[in-house]
View (cartoon, helix red, strand yellow):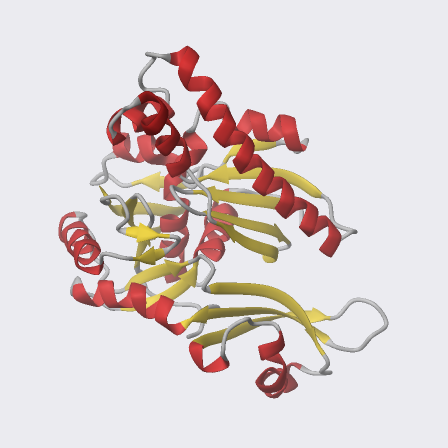
Length: 350
């Protein structure tokens, strides 16, 4: 499995999240990219848990419906994986040249990966010579469990398509960011994709991830506490979470804030670990996306607590909407489309 391999033909990016499936197709335009195909459908509770597809038949049926009705021209697809079955690390290998890396990984990779080597697909990208006086090459090492990859490729096969590309969700997040934002080469930016049950964190600099972590927290915790404490059904709790219903506001806000505090604590822990790993790096900006990023006040609370400029990432800031795509639906989903957009971008050599 080659996570870093480039494709030269358009693909449909299929983001199978914990709460919904999102499918995006992009084409190149004179000004950059245009979204020419799009489809979205919610998933039932527990269809996907911690990035793993639990109800393959239902998810495959959803994907088949989306691909049949979204106006897609591309036949190939790009899927993303994340969660505890995916490991991304920057490591220094004791080699002098790029040619020696393959041989070195045969012996050294298992010390960085907490799975049996026969259980995983491995890929890497050379970052460059290691810093400091010690000789060696710094490498971005990626490992994903084969059964996790098959978990996603199988449902796409069941839907009648093939997965031409399997990417890491945190990499797709970075693709969407780089296609829409210009930052100084030396800037270190933290990207947070906060979904229903999983948060992808990618701290990136100079076009490559410095630090990646997937955390099993997300918007479902907000919904769960509202359902439990206020005796609401799932949809009522979802509407309250997103501020669509103004009733019982005095009871709702303290409940939402308790979950926000927990989520921010996880981000704080990650940032502290990042500072210990990279003491010379300073985060300059935080961008949040995913369905949970629409929770009222979350970006402000993150900025207030952590002290970094924080805003919601717009994955379509510099991508135009084609005439056959429902612009109203796109705008309402907004930041939750970042991974799907990033996967669709894998269809282009950029």
